[in-house]
Length: 352
Image (tube, rainbow, N blue to C red; front, side, top):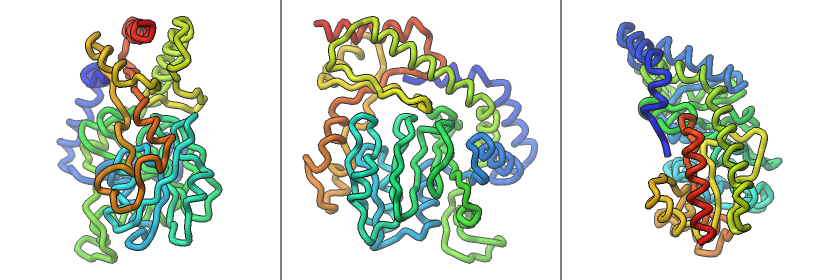
């Protein structure tokens, strides 16, 4: 699914230089590397501000904290997402309200999201799943964008967006890292305060925050990778187009559904759908092809959310997607013959 060694090899000399620069500086947390990365990231994302934090999960947590979300408040989000989207709000005591997805895009259905809102709703949280931008509702409350998988896909349209730089992301750190991007200076200032235990100046705590800081080492590595973002996105889009050509030529049955095309898609994942997903995955595994399921169970059926009151059948589109989705390799170092082999193996399975 991912070739970390190949990706790192392509920029190894730049990374080595960046790491040496940090070690020589003696500043390992915060400092010029972090502030420079934040400026460069904001420019790359078309926002006025970027605030580096310790992970994509903590980026969501920081936004929720900055918005004052807590016990008794509700957030509305999709059940088809990584746990952090909802879990970060649940940590603050918020109630998680789910709404079903649009089956054509796999992202939060904006109409369903609005229908799920109440007077207690403090935020709607769409997820730009797999690198595709979700449609945003015209909401009476802040929109928090979970953009963990979609850096470079388009401008921030909500109050803020959370980015993840987990090593397998389109721009990955060499460990955990994240950021919040926003055009709201007041919100960015508050997140900067929150990420250092609410202290300004040091040891003088205006509010209760947390340790959500970005390491200088990760910031330096991310600066070297950020300059390659457009090239890597272009490569992923080219790989996706090649997959589509190969699938079209194979004239496969209608049961196989390809990801809906969108010009802004950055293809963090190339996700197909088939009712025979598990059997297909077994076939591909036997043929030496790595795949992944994002995600095998919707969040509303996770044991930790049992008390929220949902059950099987509550969100049929999300539940069906969890039974059918399968991510194929699409990383920039993937050669054409590998993509051809993947499609040949899928065609052979579906024809059997």
